[in-house]
Amino acid sequence: MSRYNKRFNRDTFLKKYSKWIDDENIREGRLLEPERVLETLLENNRLSYEERIKVACEIAFIAAYYRATGPALCFKDPAAGWRQIKRAMLYSYWYDRISCRARDFWEVPRGEVKRPFNNVAHMSPCASLALVVARPEAIWYLDLLERSLSDGSLSWIGEDFFAAFLVRLYRKLKREEDIKDIPPNPDDWDNPFGDFFNYWDDEDKLADTIRKMCDYHLFWNYDKSDEHEAEFSNPLSVVNPVEIHALEAVRSELGLSTPTVEHELLQPPFYPIPDFAKNITTEEILAEDDLLRRIVELNQPWCDGLED
Image 1 (spheres, rainbow, N blue to C red):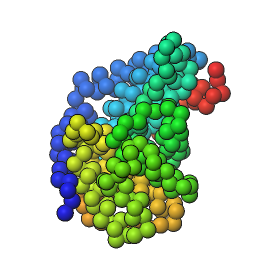
Image 2 (cartoon, helix red, strand yellow):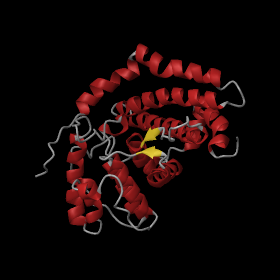
Image 3 (tube, rainbow, N blue to C red):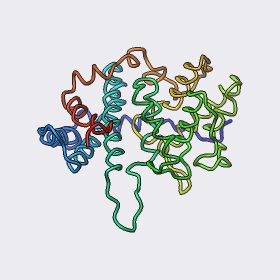
Image 4 (tube, rainbow, N blue to C red):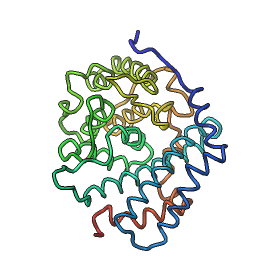
C-alpha cells in the first residue's frame, strides 16, 4: 500500500479549466489581448532588448492559456486537445528561450549577482512531455537543466525532485554516468522518482514504482506543504502522467521495455499518448499560427547567438 493517498482531481481540473475555453472574458484577457500586444511589438523587423522582454511576457500569457485549454479540450476532442498541447509547449519553449537568452545581456547592478530568470520547477512538465511530442525542444530543456547545475542559469530549490529526475534521465539517454548528487540532497531520494533508477533493471519492481509514482503524482498535483511544493500543478501535468511519458520515451530509445500497469492516472486521453499526437510537427503548428511563426523568425537568430 502506498503511503501517498490517491486524490484523483480530474473533475476538479475540468471544473477549473473548461470555462477557459468558453468564457469570453477569460479568452479576452489571457489570449486575445496578449496577441494584440504581440502583433504591435512584432511590426518591427528588429527587436530591441526591452521589446524582447515584453514579447516574452506576452508569450507567457498565451502559453498559460493553451496549457490550460489544451488538456481540458482533450476530454471532448483528443485530436484538437493534443494539438493545443503541442502549441502550448511551443509557446512555453519560446518564452523560456527568450528569457534565458535575455539573462546573458542583463546588466547586473553594482554589488549584486546575476540571478536566474526561471526556476527548474517551471520547466519540468514541458521538458518531460516534450521528450515524446517535441524532441528538439526537449533536448534544449534537458541540456539547460543539466547545465544550470553548474552555471546558475536556473534556480534550484531543495525539493525539485521532478527536475532532478529529468537530469538523471537525460544522463541515461546520453549513456553517461548518473549524477545523483544534485539538488535535492541525495539523502532525500526516498520517493518514487529515485526508485526509477534504483530499479532500472528490475521490471517487477519498476512496475510497482510506476504505481507508487502515479499515487505520488495525484497526491502532489494540488497539495503542498511547508516542506514540499505541488510538483504537478501545471495544467499540462495535473491529469497527465508526464513523468511516465518521459520514462517510457527514454527507455524505448535505449531499447528497453517499460512494464504496463493499471492505475487511474494511466487512462485516455492522456495515456498512452496517441500516435497522432506524437506525429504533430512543429512545422504544422507554425504554418497554422502566424503569430508564433513571426515570434520564431524574429527571435531565433538572437537566441542562437547569431544576432547581437
